Image (tube, rainbow, N blue to C red; front, side):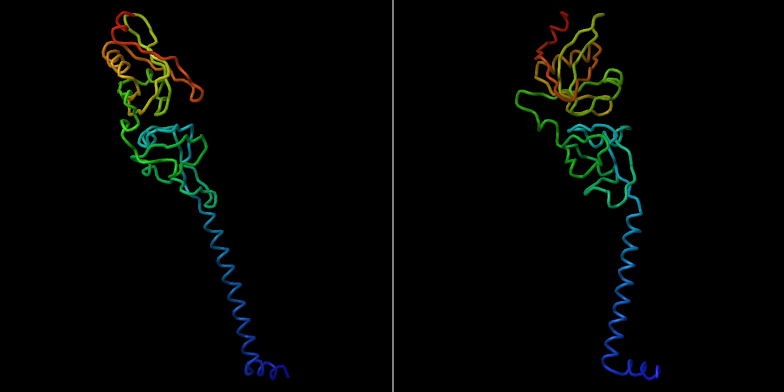
Length: 223
């Protein structure tokens, strides 16, 4: 009797349709199980992402970030925790500049960086960019970066003297620091770089306001 029922199941149209539906259901279940396994496996593979170790200020050169230890570290994240556009290769920072402040602990993203433009493109007609070579102690142990605000002191003739308050740093490349100044300030800094020892004092990142300072090279000699 059982054999007869099985035979009818395979020979009747309804039986064929039923078997087809059962096969399709089994295939669908198998496909769903495979996709879930694949997704879980993909999530389990960590992705190495660049993460800021300290505040990266707007205007910081990507080339400086790549060559100066301490700005970022590679951290592994699950794939679903990686932010859109997160940078995984330091080479992606080449020729770029930070277009916004990046807080410590944040993933570095492509949207945080733009193509480097010459510093001259951001200067007003009354402003100048001047480069001063400084050693590590004079530049606060390498803590000064593009976007920093600094006071400038000089040691000259056995005396220490503050030249300027709140100068803006346009760029830092090795031991060379580029300042945004007035023409008069630029002349004084050039003279000081040739005849005195310059020291920088790092100011707070936020809420920093300095008094106007228009010291000339002649004033430096008198001081």
